[in-house]
Length: 177
Image (tube, rainbow, N blue to C red; front, side):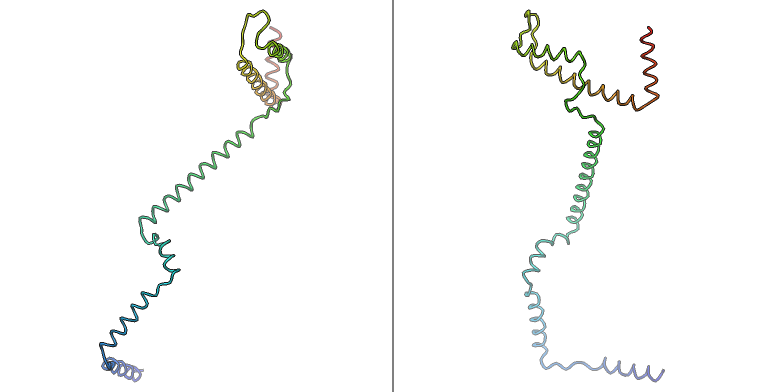
């Protein structure tokens, strides 16, 4: 092993002592500089476009700003989706009034009076009361809303046996009084 190490050291020392022989050092250095300049000037169009489009990636504060903006957009869209889902759930819990609501005798009487009112062009018989069509439309809409809410309450009562018993007992008490 020592013999090999000695041979290795000899070869290394010989290589360190021997210097390359230059014919002309000036032309050699000019040639190296020319080759380096040619490499710099040979930039392709594709590299230029990529550098122009994505050069901002190498600037730290722009990169961090873009990441922050992306996070804000993601949070905004997440919030928006949560709002939309909550509203859809609220809508799915509501009853739909498709106009086939069972009318009571009060509404039948009201609809006949309403028809009489519209036929008489807004003048009630006797000329005592004047009501605009907007007010009547508001009244009809509020009656429809009340009927829908009333149906919701009836639905809740029918599905809860304890509540149904309680309401029946209260109604029986009211009849006795």
